[in-house]
Amino acid sequence: MKMFLKEIHKRIFFLLFIGIFCITDSFAQSVNAGGEVPDHFGEIYLGMTMDQVKKALKSDPNFNFTGDPDISILKRPDETLIECSGTYFISRGIFQFYKDKLYTIILSLDTDELDHYGMFTTLSGKYGSPESLSPQEAVWKSKKYILVLERPLSVKYMDRQVLDTIRTAGRTEKTLHELSREQFMQQF
View 1 (spheres, rainbow, N blue to C red):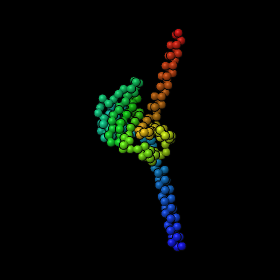
View 2: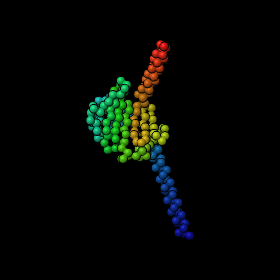
View 3: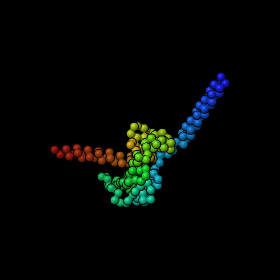
C-alpha cells in the first residue's frame, strides 16, 4: 500500500511539475510574442530606393543578385520590380517598387529546407497570433506594415500606406475607364 501511495505521489508531483512548466512556458511566449511587424528582411527595408536595394542584394548571401538583367518593368509607369534567385533557404526574391521606393518584399522559400508549420511557429513566436488566419495564409498587421505567410511557402512584407495609395489609384483608373467607355458608347 505504501508503494502504491508513493507511486501516486510521484505521478501527482510529476503532473504538477509539467503543468507549472507549461503555464510558465506559455506565459513566457505570450510576453515575448506580439512584437512589431517588421519592415525589413535582413538589411533590405521597405522604403529603400531601387539603388539601395540593389546594393543590399549584392552583399546579402541569401540572394544571387546578378545586377540589372534581373530587373523588369511592370505595366504601370510608377512601378518597377527586381526579381532574383535566392540561395540556401530562399528560392526566389521579388522586390516591388512604387515611385522608386520599395513597398513589397516577397520571398519564396525552399520547401525542401523549410516547412509552413515551422515558419508559422517562428512568426507567431515573434509577432503573436496572426490577425487573420485561413488555410491559404496567416496575416500579421501593424499600423504601417503587413506580414503574410502564404502556402505553399512564401513570406511577404508590405507597406500598408503605399498599398492603399496604389489601390486608390487603381479604383480611380477603373472609374475613368468606365466613364470613357460610357462616353464612347454615347457616340452611337
